[in-house]
Image 1 (spheres, rainbow, N blue to C red):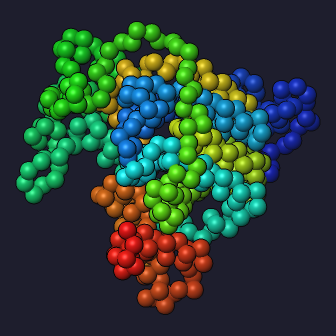
Image 2: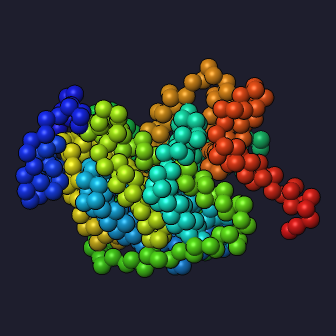
Image 3: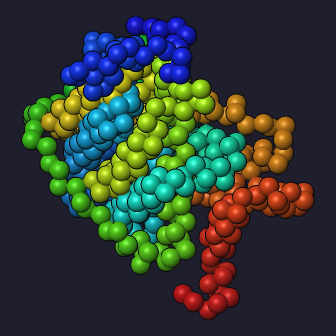
Length: 503
């Protein structure tokens, strides 16, 4: 159903008398909604973001940490199953809290981009473990919670130039895109010569798995332009079904043998798609509580760990504020100052969600812009979030299905999400070199160095430098001065250690 046209703002909508029961608690009638619209909106939101239950395991459940371990300490299949169950559980609980505590149609789950950073930018650092990485997320979430409770979050929000925040989001989008293309095998290392990468195998799209990737991507694109709800989820499911059929007929096999040796370039990149022995299973939540709060400080040192915490905080910090305003604008829930109702409670639940994601070993949870799809279907209250949360909790019993999904069926979603994040690039003034150059460096260095931290740090340092040489140092917020100085230390940590004579 199309969204109601030109919804009135909360400041100008008539306020009918409050009724009792479910209607009164969630203010359904007061906000111009109905029970059926809330239920329908909650279901739509779930189906537009349920892909995270499949996608998060493929990002954090398929990679080894700095000591060569998968999440949970088992093999890759077990790790994905555990992550799927944990992802659905934490998303369900936190989305329920958003509905009941904040009464807002906003759903939460593991943040895309954040999970990629945790995987490739933290957990894979030398000697780091998954427990250490998740401990950093818990610390970051606690800091955000304190900032919310003290009212300082708004002040920190103003410290970073808005266009630089936009560049960070765009850069993460490109980083997610290259991860998707590489994991699918669409882009591969050449291994020889001056050109580092090439298309497919020897410059050609050779093999059925690559065809599955291409067809899956095109299917999602077609559904998106046709405005089909849950296009990403349908694309993953459709690609998986097709992959199972192709494997059953062609017996293609995986790229690696039982010893991990690369033997079949045209094979499946991760899971060899086949129907599981069972679809439903009692979920295993053994990842819950598997974090080491201060382990990363021992492994990396205080400065490096502190910078990682700040990077996590920055990525997690600003998205929610923009998301809650965007969702509120979609449903006409903003007041005359552009603020959503119960904004303090929304931010409170979101900060707790960051802590819960780390404590649950599934990466930081954050608010999802896909919630706007449910609002477009008529959702206006937290009851829609309750419906979405219940659906996520039911999804915990479907964890065995995750091992059916090959990279080639899931990675088109990463490329599409990268496109969605890339659209924000229009918010950068490319004629203003003071912001355009730092934004450019932030965007390109993330995918080209395979490091989100490098992109953010380069953007901050160069922005500060440009303002200083142009005689505009006074416009730099004190917090940005401090962060830029920390990033200078981060980039120069090796020569600094050599000068100081420390190991």
